[in-house]
Amino acid sequence: MALVKAKRADHLGNLQFAYTASNFNPIIAMAADLVIVEVDELVPTGLYHQNRYNFQEHLLIM
Image (cartoon, rainbow, N blue to C red):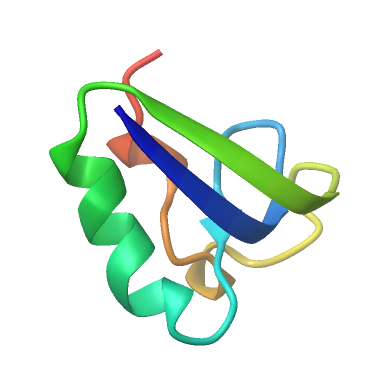
């Protein structure tokens, strides 16, 4: 299980991390069986381009 904090997330599970969290949180999230995310801002899907996210929804298994 991993606990990570994201700056932004959309409803599909795309996550954008702030500062040095973008270096470590995606790796930690991919290594864990279960990931719990604390999000500062929940935005509508499609508001930001996919390239702005550090962890994209295609890496999630729902």
